[in-house]
Image (cartoon, rainbow, N blue to C red; front, side):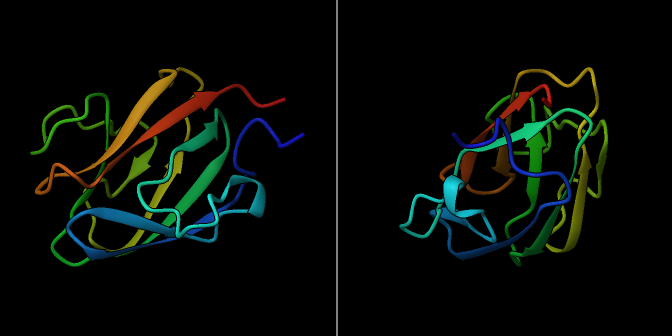
Length: 121
């Protein structure tokens, strides 16, 4: 069976060929949809560290508590450089992270996905 979440230390390469979605490179096979992983649902474990290597000029990438554009509802706890377009966003998932988060481009409503937070183990 697949692990409960993406492995600790996973780095994902995030690109945006257009304004319809983020594309995630580097997903382990068990987590890939095999079709480019556009707006892929992500499952992360509390206490694990994830790196999102961003190359998405003009598409600021935010972790959020609500799926809305703009910078409201940003979830910054454990997140280094939320809203980055180029460079690394690091997410050390806190123990108290909510079970449901989202990622969202602050400019384009279609660029979004779900982030499920679970306990490691």
